[in-house]
Length: 479
Image 1 (spheres, rainbow, N blue to C red):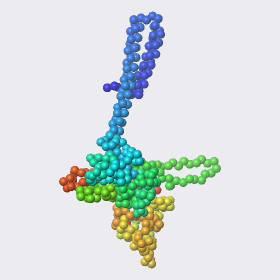
Image 2 (cartoon, rainbow, N blue to C red):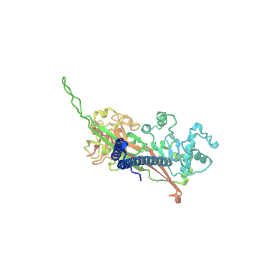
Image 3 (tube, helix red, strand yellow):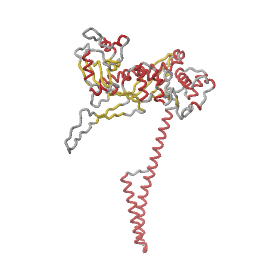
Image 4 (spheres, rainbow, N blue to C red):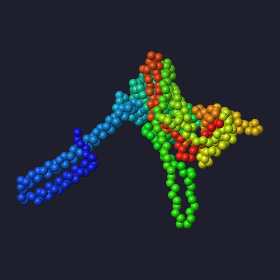
């Protein structure tokens, strides 16, 4: 094995070679006119030392070349494995199926739609419908000439047991949140051109990914209000923080030196914990009879399950190997006088326990509690026996309280002794990190004896409250 020298050894070998060269040149110049046998012996000794120094340097250079070749080979193997892993298995949020480069499928990315005509028996469908036909065929196992042609067109093999799809980018999740909060899912479609570059790219009602994201958000109060950040990788995410709220400038006299007040930086971290939907077993009859709706049915079920577990962890997770929930991370605001009731004055006190600068910026600021607490609050009356709730309560609960938005979170505690029942503050300071890639697996053989096919979904996520020291969210705790 060729020896690679350390930097110190290489420098020493190079210095030795240069010194020997200079010594040999000087020796030759001094003895050239009367070269003796003794001079020849000394010359050969120096020559031997010089060759040894050169050989060590040459061996080092060869070792470096071998190392570089090995690194290049390793990189090529990793790239090869990545491409193999992606073969035939990816949906984008645009609804377009992508497939990898070296599998048993078509290879490469799908060509431009306008340059790739549909097969003759699919000419009555749009390309998007063909994609969904292929996906449903993969899900259900239905086999007919149209489904088989669709599978061949997109390069998706029935033998593939797992596909991966990408969550939308961070900005796209905000459109999902706005649509779910407003209960107007058409806003997803209306906002398509805002972030896909081409209207129609986000295929709500058709896209596997859109159904998944809507179901997750609708099942999770935290995903309605938190800032959802999607990242391509699962490496640790760090967010620098600084709290400068206690510092202020100062008045100076003439020619007086300024005072240095340093910033105190902190750091919040997000990891990537794995969550699953648990297995969903679907009878063969349901797969066959509802094949045209599976792209809505399956992702909705998986999305709701994942949304609920993320909501639970993002609400009350203890941060030990899981999310640091918003209730866990929030600061104390108000202690109620009762263990079984909340007064309107206590609601106002909770609101004013949060810094005025946070309350002034209403974007992302509001209340959070569960539905039973909402019912209790709606029954509060003044001294004239009039409901304190806004008049809109006659036609349906309004979406604000004291002019601030409220969010219903099923994993907030009921009113009971020592329970943290209400939050107020900048709820968007809670950040949910979602790793962009979602894995969706079909288990066909495992429950074959019951004539069922199982599906399971995996995602990676973490959550934490970004609190640089200004305590952006506070809680009300019962006595």
